[in-house]
Amino acid sequence: MPLRRPGPPRPARRLLGAVLLTALCLTCAVPASAADTPARGSAYLGMGVLAHDGSAGGPTTREAAQTEGVDVSGYQGNVAWSTLWSSGVRWAYTKASEGTYYTNPYFAQQYNGSYGVGMIRGAYHFATPDTTTGATQAAYFVANGGGWSKDGKTLPGVLDIEWNPYGDACYGKSASAMVAWIADFLSAYRSRTGRDAVIYTATSWWSQCTGDYAGFANTNPLWIARYASDPGTLPSGWSFHTMWQYTSSGPTVGDHDRFNGALDRVVALANG
Image: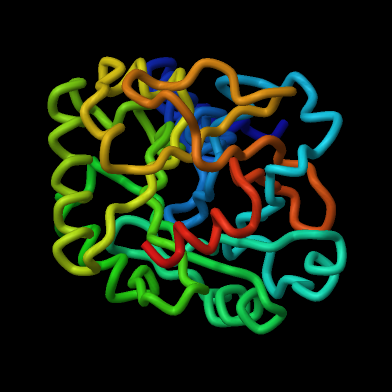
């Protein structure tokens, strides 16, 4: 009768089992919270609105004293500007930069393309207050498409300040520290361009992360995000909005906006 090879002692078997289990776990799926975090640079205007504020429809009519606009970023790629112009869109904002680590590879086609069909256009910066100072990001923005010129066709730059898609909603900052960061950005932008930047935000984020600070309302136009039939309650200090992002599912590019005024008021904002 052939001899059976003895197996390893029981303690060795337990150790072998633990090693195998560890090896198997190395192939396990990444936890959903980590897997769902987007890549740096992929953020865009209104990225957090649906997740945090939801959607309650949109405006059913367009008033005569409102002007249709759109906002775009790298994920839309090359935009069909002539189609948008034919549909009545007259102004546009393009993402230029994020933090100090990303510039939009489609910026030229989007920014120049909108201008080419006759639109009044501008650029926006997605803020990441947890990476570098406000002044540093303002300088990066201006150096990468966020500047301004008084040609009647260039809108002032936009600070997109909203939920952090990469981590803590308020970027790990207290309300006072967030207000200081925003002030640093706005001051640096004005010193480099001569214009006060537009602030894009949602009322719920502004209340949560700045303590509903009212101190920017006298100088900085408000672009409010709310996917509903009206802009709703505005952040403290602002008695009116300048622009309103009302949907992320509009024709051609998704994000559609209304300027709170006729086309001549869009031109007036461009001229400063």
